[in-house]
Amino acid sequence: MFQNRSYKLELLDKDHIPKEDLATNLRELHFINTYLGGHAVTLKGLKSFKLEKNKKYTLADIGCGGGNTLLYLAKWAKR
Image (cartoon, rainbow, N blue to C red; front, top):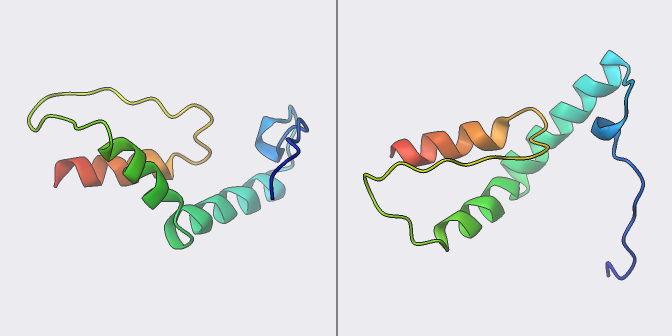
């Protein structure tokens, strides 16, 4: 299905993004992560590290879009 990798810049990687396009793209990312499983995939990968309870960890999300994945993970970690 994904035999060929695209090296084109994504919208958020471009230098000058019209505000309307940026807002639309961030809404789309939020929808994908929230309703189509983006957060679930990230959380599954994070759980595979066998993290210790009550230990502090630092997580960096490079290219985090609107930051909603980090917010999701922070809420998960507090539980």
